[in-house]
Length: 340
Image (cartoon, rainbow, N blue to C red; front, top):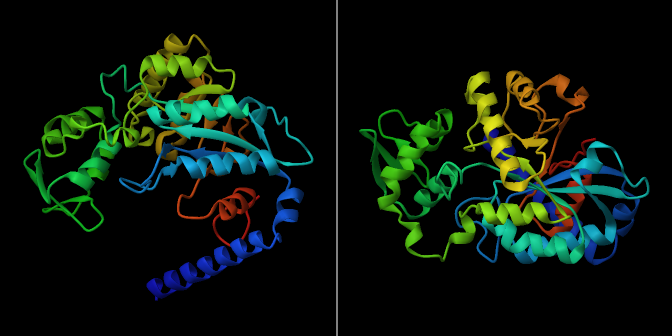
């Protein structure tokens, strides 16, 4: 029964998306965009030239991103993160704030020139993984392993086999290796990257750099120097802060803040929780660490909506058309009902 409901919902959504796209071709949606009011922070991750689903579903083709920007400029009012927090909204248009997570070098390579050319602001949430001596985030490493790694691997004397979704599952417990790593500290993540790299030596070629390579310190510094870019923290190692003690999480957040401030010469006042995951204790720790802008995806606790430091973000869906993405941006949902 559950599967049947999922299929029905999927079909209904496809019909709705098709209807929206037909409406766009016929000009039916223009008034919807022109009359929209409110504000939304939009969350992007990586930008690539093609094959955005090569390793995961958080990338968007450069061509599509350009189309998003042109649409925003034509129909919406694009504002900075600071303006969003200060509620400096245009009352006569829908307000969009652009943000990027994870600190990919492709943000510097592809996004910064667009911001400069179009004169629009965006915020980039970056880890301190470069200071830790790495040029890739652990979860991107696992994505590459899922694509290029062998059918079976051994890690810490435990056998893992790849399933049809390119995830490694424990033969003994059926637990996902990625979930196991996410629940642990960085030591086990670092160990996995060191010991498993032999099975997917992606650095031997630069063909896939856009999908994993992190910004260098000089690129972060140059990005921060742009009047159109704001830098925020995305944690130190890209650990799930909700899986750590409040003390450990606070230490990582302080370290990431200090690292980014040392590089950019700017005060780093915003943090986006990795994976959108946090606890009440992590929120309190972030404030003690000196952050005054705390970015989630969806609020996890009732009191979050009344906390002046916290804001939600809406993650871009790479599977739908630009027209449907813009409708969803306004509604705040990919479902048929809207969210305020």
